[in-house]
Amino acid sequence: MPTHRFHIGQIVFLRPSLGRNIPGGAYIVTKKLPERDGEPEYRVRSVNEPYERVVGESLVRLAGE
Image: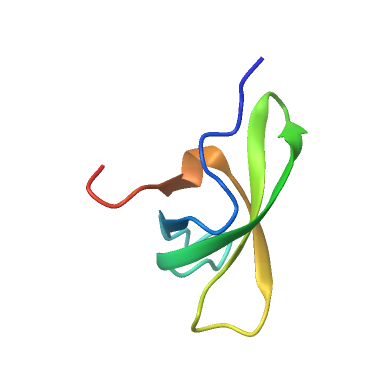
């Protein structure tokens, strides 16, 4: 069973996804969500957008990874 790799308040970098209209860049993890299809999910917020997004762990990374 996978566990969440990132923590609330941590800054992560989101890989851009043209198909889902998601701009890349720095995001703040605001909430850990239950797993979906065996992958942990997160609610994240960019300082450049007024709303939050739900993303799977495979779409985010720490700086320097």
